[in-house]
Length: 241
Image (tube, rainbow, N blue to C red; front, side, top):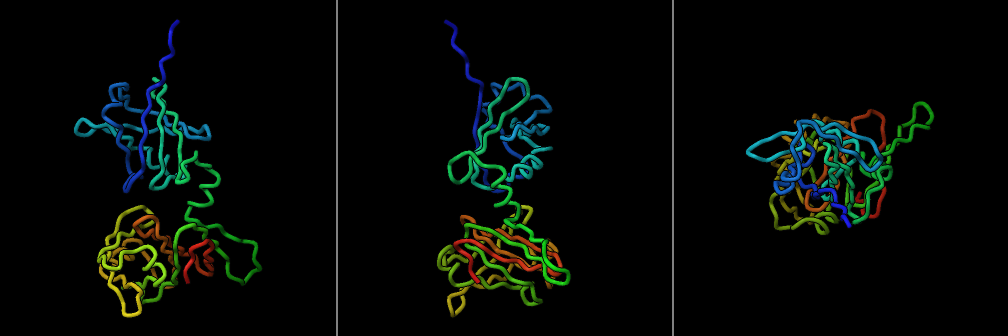
């Protein structure tokens, strides 16, 4: 009796810089002819065209991969399984931090900046943007001095950061890393200074904007709200004022 041969597959765990391109394991390339154009089929059945890039005998999902990441609300730490159909198409299964298959609609709410707008407000009143997070986070409305330095609340400093560590990595909305210097203050808070100004300048953060700093694993994730007249409300178990 003939036995069925399972479709070749591989997995990857998303780490820093994953949004730009993704390396295909070398061992998997033996099962794969390396066409110039592939399709990725997401959990909802939609497909994305992704071009391959070859560099130093390695293959990467490159052009089109960034859109796949964005449209599926992928985040660092997600676990992806790629099942290859032998005809330039990969069926992708996504597992999130719960170790279960990710609910795309739920991820859309949680991960698209974590924010939901409430537009049903009377004229002349502030628009409310609700930022939901399960992580430690705090917000600040940017004043001129905050463009040069920022203070991390003591609750977050104690819970999430090594008080003796001098460098903290921030990730901006484009997932670019920004190492910044942190220094302890007398009251236990942490002062972010060197590197913070460059991050603000590159992301065009200005006076009046609202920023949310969300601590995911060992880095700080920066969210920027530029709308005039908006009021950002934080909700979650670890919100810090």
